[in-house]
Amino acid sequence: MSPDDLRQQVELAVVELIKKKLADGSMTEERSQMISQNVLDTLQPGMSFEELYRALPRLDDAFPELSPVIVPHLREYEDHITQQAAGTVRELIKQGQYDAAIKLSKNVVDQRVNLVWQGRGQAS
Image (cartoon, rainbow, N blue to C red; front, side):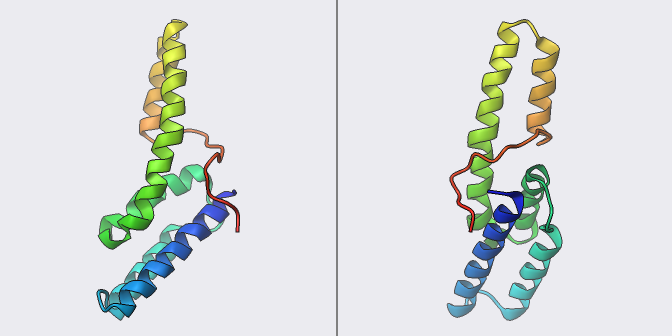
């Protein structure tokens, strides 16, 4: 899966959520337009995985109704990237490479790590 595939997957899930909420009357047309514009402004074609994972949390800051779409992707980031990094940090500490372990830990917390997609999603 490429970053653009992930971006499109998120955008599609947002569209489905908006359609559902409009149909059941729990969202206004104006709110749906605001959400759509925010998603299009925030998630740009050509973003890297790193940029996407930094942008995703911003989507539900102003629009909490997007959390059901965003949280699974953030959880996947945490489950895969953070857990892999924790194992690497443990190995670095065992090897006495404390500075490298600290640097990697800070980069993971700041979401500044080079990502390679290993998720469960499939390209569309």
